[in-house]
Image (tube, rainbow, N blue to C red; front, side):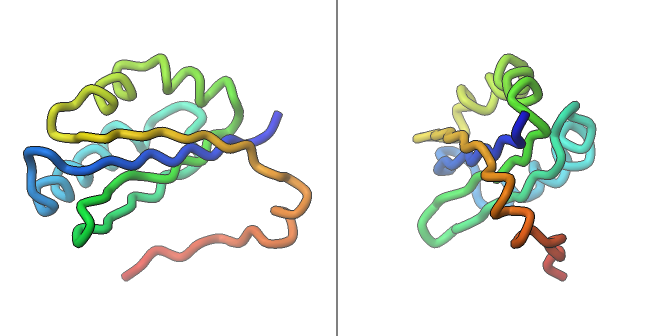
Length: 108
């Protein structure tokens, strides 16, 4: 089974970027840090173009499917604070990634 990469993007509809970032901090500490099968999530922000989202690294297809069936994911997809929500899933190419994957540092 191959790791799955999910990229979710959206625009903010009824909240400010600062409100969104504060909300993300609560979610990161509470919800996303405990999701089964989620290896990592990188939070994305492009406030000049009103684009936000995340890159999710799932252990396998089953973990991704469990998330997509969850109330957390359904809430994201139907949240009125977001518009133009898009989710795209990619399978990881294991062999070439072995040569290029490194631990990504967090911005300080």
